[in-house]
Image (spheres, helix red, strand yellow):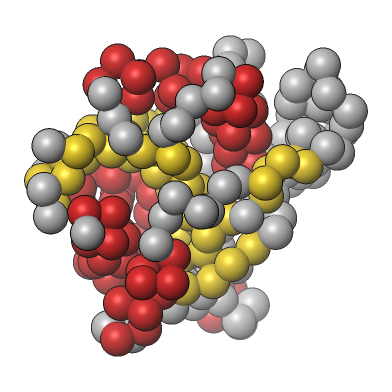
Length: 212
């Protein structure tokens, strides 16, 4: 049986819940299309340790074929696949001032970008399956400068340095209704929410393509 390590984050800032955590707990330990989901939840902070290495080591110990990381970004309108991660801590709203403008990996230049390899994933099939069920799929070249980008960069780097064949995908989710701190302001900003059920269904469709 294939195993996939699925990670998410706890709430941050003014958000009462984090949709990524909600989706992970909905899928935790389930078997979907013959794929078993193993959950991991991180604090929504810039950590002192290398979480990417933690994820890769857990995946190796489990014999997992893939790692999927989920995060929440309020401006997203659908399941947003991140294509790049950047060696930078750069988010004035959420990053501690002392870390702002620093490198994630001090061995590498500030702002260095690494591609998050989508080739092992049947993204085309996933997008078509989501479209058929009215689930929006987006793409992004900027994972943000906070903990999501931090995790994506460390995980991508760990996989490259270890020459590991475990496939990796980072998906930003929109807010769920429960995650919206102020609905009036949220709507006025042109933002949209998505139900947890719909987000879970999207991940199920992704795993369907993994199992094929």
